[in-house]
Length: 144
Image 1: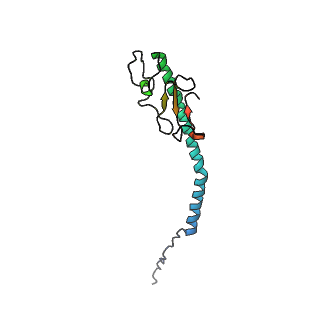
Image 2: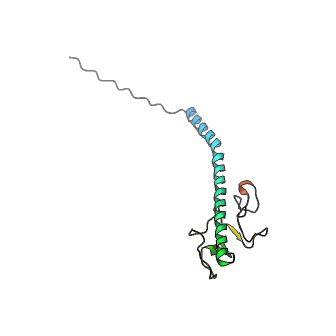
Image 3: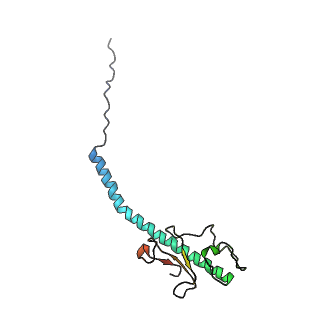
């Protein structure tokens, strides 16, 4: 009587990644990041400018509505949301719980009277948070 032969158990060999394969993957990922990264950052800055422009238009309209009701411009942007001493106040003039911030998370600058014979100015200093600048660092005004 012959015994059935048992299948031989050979240890299965698992192939690990070689150092060269890992380096190739890292180089590919790095190349993709180098190509795509600047485009994403550029799109982010562009969307911040658009957001700031929309906020400026909204704030400008709220200040003008305040003026139509109260016959004077607000002393500060908080007056658009909280009733001050003016009896004609019919606000709030913004549909927000807090004053909006520009696309970079900074407060808007409000001045009354404004420059260039404007009755008021609402300004964002842009990405550099300083007066002046070019490109995404340029100042944005409600009159642009």
